[in-house]
Length: 238
Image 1 (cartoon, rainbow, N blue to C red):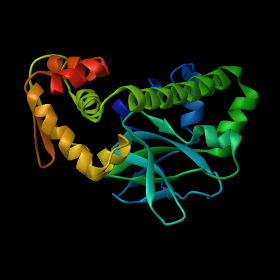
Image 2: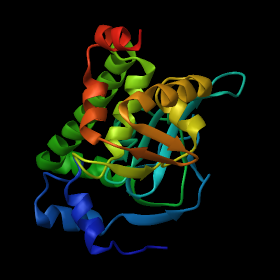
Image 3: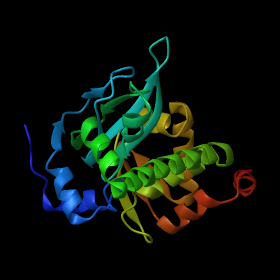
Image 4: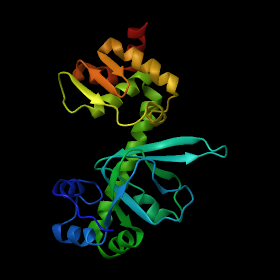
């Protein structure tokens, strides 16, 4: 079933790396060939090893990508939310998905079939450059994640994650945690017990976490803590 895009969703799509550089005519042509999928929490979009069929843009909600080891344990690769795309690189470089994708919450997703992407890359250099920009953005995100794992403490990683959810740049705010704490821990490369310790350490910078909400007394202070030199952070703790 095809569900039309709302006006704010159309604006969102226009601002993605995947479609942001396209002229109105080409964008309208592409959107006429895709569909919006409404998903329930826990819905499998594709499994690791499935034949590549489409890529997606998240219009609303949260989606996790993960790999399964031989024992069936999940390793979280990435978590995507509103305005982010995923699986487009697999459309061109792989016959099967290297990861699985599952909705974490109720979600609306723009589903873009393989043949639509491949045809437009062949026929339109403008779209080919948009694909390169989107892939480059994902690569930069992965490099940033690796850098944070190497250079930031666990508490700093959590601070950066919370700061990214804040709707304001200064002052205080309360934010809802978008998904369960076990998934947050996996997303940040931590164990659940390490996440709990990180939440406790962030009390010193004015963060109070209760159930699925975090009260932040100063967004600026939280951001400064997240970007501190690691050695300075350790000295502060000691």
